[in-house]
Length: 425
Picture 1 (cartoon, rainbow, N blue to C red):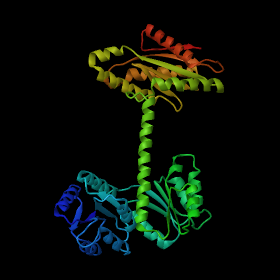
Picture 2 (picture 1 turned 90 degrees about the vertical axis):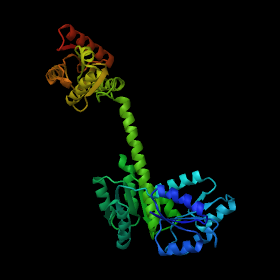
Picture 3 (picture 1 turned 120 degrees about the vertical axis):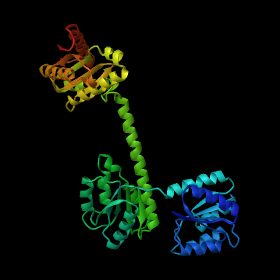
Picture 4 (picture 1 turned 30 degrees about the vertical axis):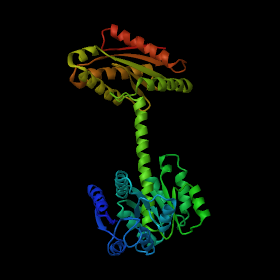
């Protein structure tokens, strides 16, 4: 990044130089408007920063001359001023000033510079699906997108683009509205928005040579996030693509955080199994489904034998490691649809869907034997397991099923521990 700073006062120039130096920004410094114009014509700058009042002309005069030239019309220009009159602000915007920063508070000005530079340095990442059937336009746009560091899949047909979209994940879709093939750019947009999964939320930037208000409104109503008219201006395309991708990545971050919070709410953080709260809600639904669809459902209630001895003899870290490895063991023994949860302390529940008493007994015995032989966290550990089954056609609730399994666990304890006991409802 390279900045041209046009400031007359040496002291103020020095202060700005210190700020940009901290930001590791390359900057050139001149003191008057004519020198600024000459520097801009001879060099390529990413940003021009100038004072309102210069020795030979105003900063607005410099801005107007630059905006009148095609080569410099789009350079971002920041005006430094202590004049906050409404007329001055209006004149500045009409002259083409990009942003106005007040000189009166240098601390605020320093923060503004840091935010400005940080925003200009923002690097976007992602994969783009690009639909354009005009070769020259596509060539220029592809060069810009790839220069931004984006991976781009280009298609001249919306039909082919849609087939690819169904196979590949993208972060942004850029499509011309009028393209060859049966499916138009608008049709592609409708297909995307009609999906019933997260892909329907992907940002879409529409491009068209038909630049009229009614067309823009209609395209936005169809679900486009933004619109750009041909001929495409490089700086405008860069800004719109950057904004859309930045918003997409922020949304993805928030969504990921929300998922983690949801998982945290239903998951036991030590073992990775479901927690007691989730078990209560999910088990009631599982029992209701078993009653409605008339299939068997079994519940295993597992209690580690003499677990307190491990904590007392080896410390709570050792006990936590045992519970953590037990959680992994139970997850491994669950099928899709089964629910394994930590009920509390060293007590665990496994809900077996479409599983009768005989198969539940086999499953419980397998788990018991694996616990005994695995030496969880290096310690000899055993478990007593109670089994209760809701047989086909019987009506009951989760609380009753759990009570039966609880009774069976105590029977296993009384019988000498490290065993499986059963009961039925």
